[in-house]
Length: 113
Image (tube, rainbow, N blue to C red; front, side, top):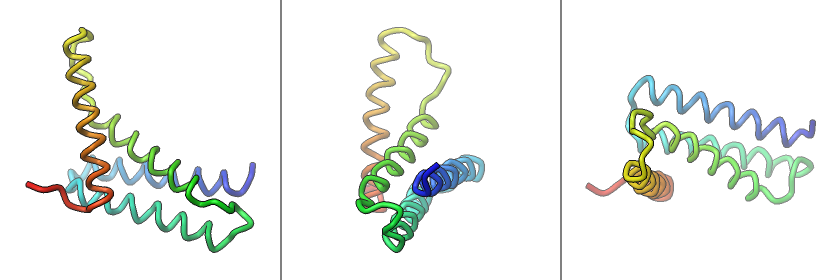
């Protein structure tokens, strides 16, 4: 295993635990996503300080961002909808909105009322 794989795996494990804690404590979405952003930034900073691990840290940042967003999206889906085309369309619209919402909070920190 390469060292960068261990760093990525550790960061993913932290992100997964962070999401689990967010769900259990019912914390504010903006606070949770700010914490996710801090974990990703800290991981990227560590790799930048150790360039022998990886030269282009944007790849790692993007992988961790997509991973954290996917955890978020999976947690937002409700499993009690019947598997018909109409509910699939609604679920797709909900996924698009949740993706937009997550991205917005990640980029700006606060969602407008």
